Length: 169
Image: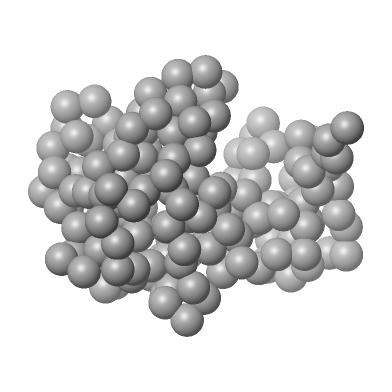
């Protein structure tokens, strides 16, 4: 029997409210969850990108960078390290990550969150990447120019915010 994933709830100032609720609960105005995205960079400066599984509810088959929601009790650093490992098999250590860009998303449908985009440096090759098949159907190491080309051709999730993050490198 699987346990339902729980998340912590934050207020508009990103202060923990003390509330922990099931992940699929619709958030009210002024309630936010925490997300983290990983710009996993290899030793040559290329970024590991992933293609979403085709059965995903949102943006199936789209290119993106690894990441996801923080579980209850996790910081965004904890979440980015866990998500990077779950989705790619690449072990990212807290001392090897640096937040480049943070923002708040307010959505009338309740998809409210704070998101941190991290630069994660790791020594790995594409052959060492092990994807989580339920999440990822393809991976590539890409330069920023290649990510830009993918965005111009078919769209790349979070592209504008990734650009802002990379500007803070």
